[in-house]
Image (cartoon, rainbow, N blue to C red; front, side):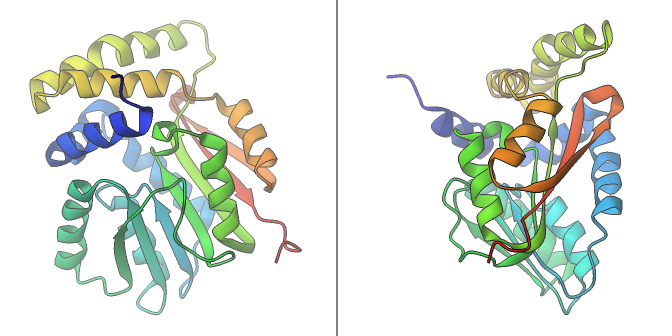
Length: 238
């Protein structure tokens, strides 16, 4: 019996968790760190803010948010891979970030009340969910009126030549890296499929609006191989 997308994703991340951070740096040539830093510069998260990091994985963005909100703020990291969360817990405990709590949960059904957070982020996770729109609606539901929803993920380059090189790298090179450095060829082969099928920048911008957000914008990274989308919940949506 063929696995659902949700089952496949869960299997992938439960297996690759031990090498996830190393492989991220290898596959993106550490560019993902620059992309997140550029995203945070635009977000301008203030001290004392409350933030939710969905599909938090090993909690790198969760920790970056925690450093911004400070001890008086609050950051929740949520992921459906318990093995990924174990790595995140180790990092958070080592850094003694009391303002952070990590929890097991599903992005499709966030276990929070409406209007709970000032910021909601999802980094390299939206492409792996079964229903993009359902998750975008959930992100919009739990953010406060006037609050910001931010998605950093792979995208679809449009520049001729560059686009073909990107697809070649993802389809043929990335799985080989997965085999050589993480002994996980099949898992990284599947991840390139999820990246290949993910909506481009314009399409995702439109989906943000369909999910109920306004003042939607995006920033392309490295020729469009990745992009950050920003959206706000209307202030009158209490």
